[in-house]
Image (tube, rainbow, N blue to C red; front, side, top):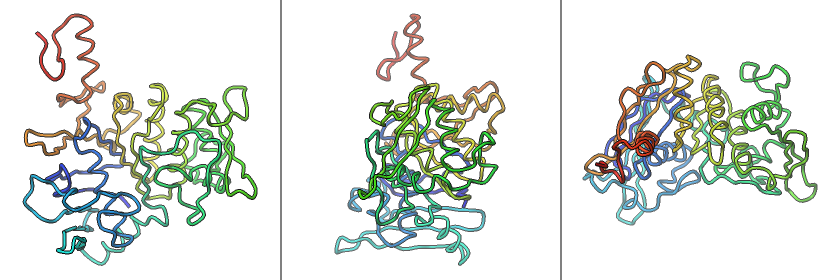
Length: 365
């Protein structure tokens, strides 16, 4: 499934936002500007395609309707719409007098219902979400005893998934190294490339638990708690992406957590590689290294600018979320630079060399 357009109405700080989508979609912007609300719109569609759960389900829980609606909008319904060419579906949420939610669906055709029903299928992992709260280093990891093939929105079952599916063969075009075409082989290829490490897993018999070990340089069997935290946070990203079915949609919050800038730049190569192999990514990040990683890829022609949709989310004077597609030109130049669009490095540099800059949003004289 490819989501070509997303529209969100009356959700939190979003009054009405429409976004054209590409294979790789990067959302950037200041805190509380509405990036997470865009993701939550997608998650609401996904969890309500599975069953009517309203604003509170297995992917996201927003609380009451009053807490979730835009306070600057008079309309009573929250609406989220997704398009793929002629196919579209809209899910609407409205309050009922007894405090429950009224859920309605509008759709372009029966083909739309089938298309998006299959595309947002959580059981088949056609839609996957990995939150910023994903688990870090642990000595042991639990199995999912109810749905073994689910990684979990916090990546809590990623190690167990890898332990069960380590030998799954991946399609050749989705592989690097031309040596090992298994899931474990490709996870280790990228883990070695990004962070100079490799992982192995083993089951603790009779305990429904999985143990992970890492190798770094010449040191083997390093327990997760004795290796850098960034590697443990990275591993669930690699497992989710490399085990994803073709034509799936993957939503990632802050995939660069605890990674060194060099590793973040290499992570950008990985994410672009995934998006170019019939998967669609939606990524939220606060890292200028991630932003610059894609700029550098476009500047060097290693990445296709048309396949990368960078959206800068900000609040306007009415405290409503607005979005702007960032234009990357020759040599990676940002052609429509705005305040707070990763401009802090230039501000700090100006201060260091004694040029006027901004402090706390105001000009320094």
